[in-house]
Amino acid sequence: MAKVVQTSLEEEEYRVFRDLLEKRKLSIREGLRKAVTRMLEEEVRVDPKDPFLVRRPRGRSGLGDLSRKHDEYLYGKKKSRASS
Image (cartoon, rainbow, N blue to C red; front, top):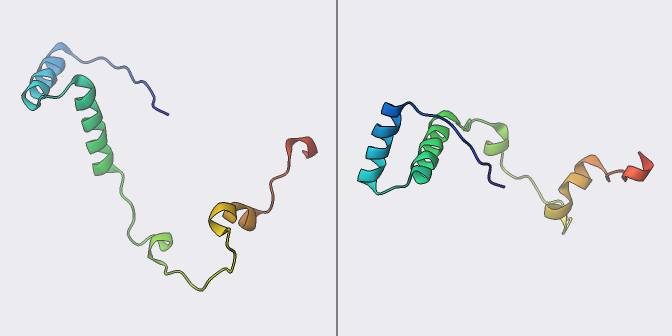
């Protein structure tokens, strides 16, 4: 679900940003999304040594529905609210 974000820019910031976007034929919305995306790409890094990413699969489960029920197999069945 998308979130609406609102902010204020100084007059000079807005003018320079708007001029840059006009040169690139982008709307303010598109430019802000590109800026956020670029910042996230630069700042949020995945550790290539993360064991989750480097481990090779070992064997087979033999369970045909593992992709749908993996949480149930790992943590057990969820308790219904009525029994809590």
